[in-house]
Length: 227
Ligand SMILES: Nc1nc2c(ncn2[C@@H]2O[C@H](COP(=O)(O)OP(=O)(O)O)[C@@H](O)[C@H]2O)c(=O)[nH]1
Ligand SMILES: [Mg+2]
Image (cartoon, rainbow, N blue to C red):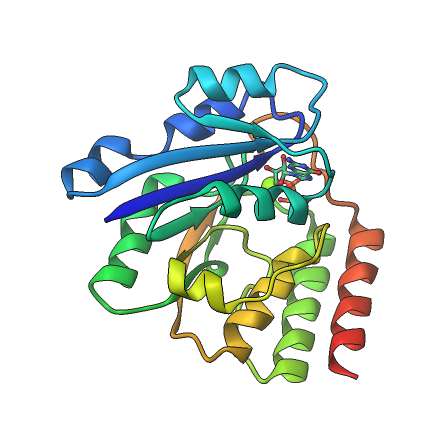
């Protein structure tokens, strides 16, 4: 069986290399899996692409900007039976990848998603506005509208099977991709598992997320999709 780790990266010089290196390649290979690491770049103006490939990733350049477009490209290029996804900014514990894989292979889960709210959040890793208002409100709204029971719909560290990927219709170009995927997982009745994770401060660079624009886009996406 093969595992593909897919990471989108826009101007993540200084941290994308460390993020790639934090993937426990030996542990994954020792457990008997083939492994590929894919970084999808989008016209970064810094050394992101070079740093990622020096760290051992295969780098693709996607011409259409956006978080969703980057992931769609990465998933198209990935040939794994299991796909793991996460940010290039050092915030997610990719070193915990084997836990995610094991929930799929040993417990038969289809879709595994981290939860920062069931786990822990390093001081300064998430602005108070997102931690106490934005994320809980968006998570609550999604659960009410789509009948799901997530605790952290915006957690970007996830793993799923190829069959699960094939069932999900993923078309959003931008950050709404994150919630499109959890809605698709829920609506396709995938066997979903939440794993508590520790969320760290960004290892450098700048957040690409804009609180109000992206918050509003998420609300609009949910309402348009539901009604
Ligand atoms: N290739 C690519 N990656 C992106 C784009 N926008 C965001 N990313 C990456 O997607 C991940 C999530 O973005 P981030 O700024 O960390 O958002 P946050 O975690 O919600 O604050 C990071 O690894 C970014 O580098 C984009 O337009 N293209
Ligand atoms: Mg991030």
